[in-house]
Length: 175
Image (cartoon, rainbow, N blue to C red; front, side, top):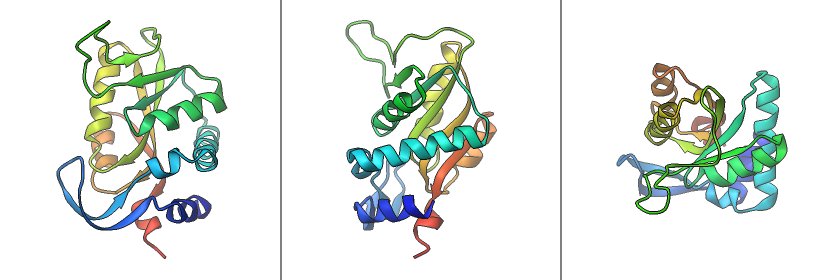
């Protein structure tokens, strides 16, 4: 995990200042995993670390799902590493075409591992979980690159989902 923490710091994914998060909360830290996920070497490091977690915890699934926007490149990389089909979950239902919120072919009763870039309270990923469950899919695990440790773990647990962070904010701020 130290290598990932160092890589995130080196690429500028951890910023200090005054920020407003997606949840509306104010923060002195901003975690911009897009800085890492747009770098092929760091994206590969993240995908390989997720693959290690899957193996370590004996987690299997039928699909890898990514929450738009931050989780999509991570999900693509993990899909390529695992050969699992990819699902992309839009934040909103599109108003044209098929009007779908899930991109990818699904089958009811199948399981999905969701990946996300950053969690704070978990509200975005909980919305994606509801969307997938509404389509008859099973979600037991969410793997996140960085958990800000502000309630996501507990909120997902209450929804019957285990949150597995590659790294926690407290670990990133240790140095």
